[in-house]
Image 1 (cartoon, rainbow, N blue to C red):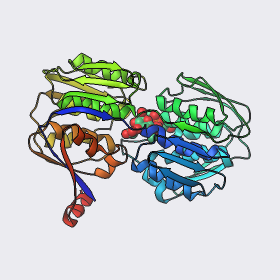
Image 2 (spheres, rainbow, N blue to C red):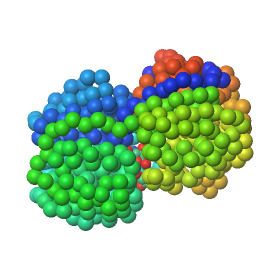
Image 3 (tube, rainbow, N blue to C red):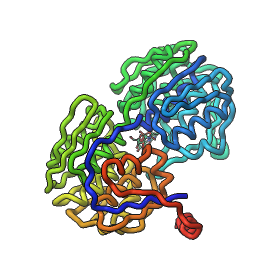
Image 4 (tube, rainbow, N blue to C red):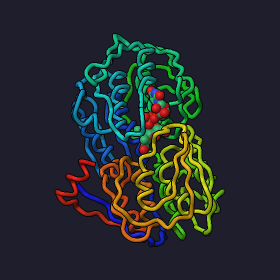
Amino acid sequence: MQKLLIEGGHELNGKVRISGAKNSAVALLPASILADSTVTLEGLPEISDVYTLGDLLEEIGGSVSWNGQDVTIQPEKMIAMPLPNGKVKKLRASYYFMGAMLGKFNKAVIGLPGGCYLGPRPIDQHIKGFEALGAEVTNEQGAIYLRAKELRGARIYLDVVSVGATINIMLAAVKAKGKTIIENAAKEPEIIDVATLLTNMGAKIKGVGTDVIRIEGVPSLHGCKHTIIPDRIEAGTYAIAAAAQGKEVVIDNVISQHIESLIAKLREMGVTVEESDEQLYIANRKPLKSVDIKTLVYPGFPTDLQQPFTSLLTQVTGTGVITDTIYSARLKHIDELRRMNALIKVEGGSVIVSGPTQLQGAKVKASDLRAGAALIIAGLAANGITEITGVDHIDRGYEKITDKLTSLGANIWRKDMTQKEIASFQNS
Ligand code: EPU
């Protein structure tokens, strides 16, 4: 087990290239189950969640071969192997095996997913969708059993706008008989990316990117080649880091329209942000002023950038209020930031950050992926050394984060933890 160490105070300068989108990759890989022939996915991020899903595809009989960021999946020998335990519990996105296996085999057994703890994360809308399509769904000893004689298209209204439920229902519906309409669907770019793959496989899907998605079921889907979109949350994280501790940073391989809400907020604070073809240029003209943030479904401000943004607010003048309407309990970074001297209050559902504060290096723990990103940004701006444990969470979602930050001028490195440190981390 490793920890991250950061010597703060070094300015970020230069260019960083953004990887493929994690939250797309984790749906594209299970989507390959639906094809009858080889699927090639290009530009996947080299992160642990992606490899875990590759292993799960092999567990059900798929042949998976990696070539750097590209993967070739041969689904011909896949079977409806139950996955009640094991790797499936390591990450949230294993729930996409439910929709994909149900769509392909009319049955699936999938352990309830793990992933970041952000407060309650129900999957009732996924299940409601599967049931509407004709599946019987039961929860038996922590695993979801899905069985259907056949899947039939249906009209499904989502009570909550959900990325996962929208994608999962699409996966189950693309081969169902007849027409499926998903109303109040989520509109995130990752949903469009998954629909693009499915369409290239022969699916008939209309309306992605709007809140009504129409699917006409087809009897079979074939293999294809697909290139993933860039990771808007990784791009946003580097943009926030650049605003907090950067001089001039170019973020390469980004679709700036995907993070317009963040760009607008950075500009409101006084950060210079220039958009050009596939690049963002961020220059820091201090002093910056504070802003308020409310997270919303896309195209609103993403919940996944709320925690990193909290660290930025500690560095700017004034008081900023953050309200996370998607995951109100996504707050585990706050105590850790306070250990570093941040002035943060939690009142009702809001996080109130006062700045600017000279953060101090400290020993802190990343309890989830984006909390880890928040602590890294704080560490970059802090005096002295910050030591971050819980690096596994960070490696689930950020490709080569130490290398990328080092190339921008940060002093960040990894170190193996001693047995004593591991024991104390596991007990904390
Ligand atoms: N919700 C329900 N019922 C459901 C599904 C969701 O009540 O059946 C609620 C959730 O509790 C939450 C809201 O609806 O309050 C939105 O949840 P959503 O289903 O959209 O989240 P998700 O699909 O489980 C994905 C990302 C998250 C990201 C959220 C919101 C993946 C694998 N995960 O989760 O990413 O925070 O959408 O945008 O795509 C991350 O990357 O760090 C991460 C946690």
